[in-house]
Image (tube, rainbow, N blue to C red; front, side):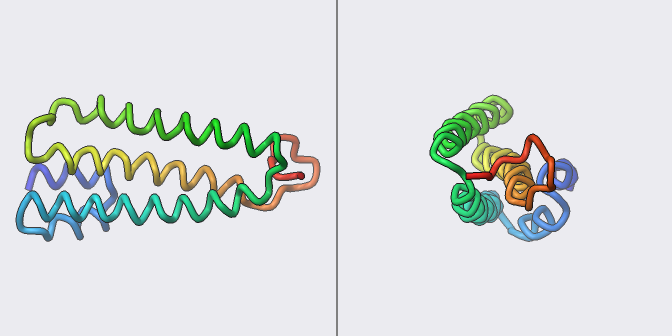
Length: 127
């Protein structure tokens, strides 16, 4: 499946294999949407842990950053998937894009929740 090869590069082999087992577009879209929801839930949980490390000033800045990131993610994916708008594949393409960017954000926040090394000047988390 040519389309499946394209999705492998976007969403990763395991997810693409799992979602491509679906027999119709609706099933594939649901699969990717569910994967996005699971990733968003993981991100929300990690953000909750990270927020506990922050002082009030850092917390306000992080909340602004997170709101801006969500706006960026959604705008980017809207633009990236605009060529499929109106088609049956559109919802799936938006979900794949959002999941990819959410995976990247999850990795970024995981790095931020790691313990700080002594003398590390860019480490956030000292209250």
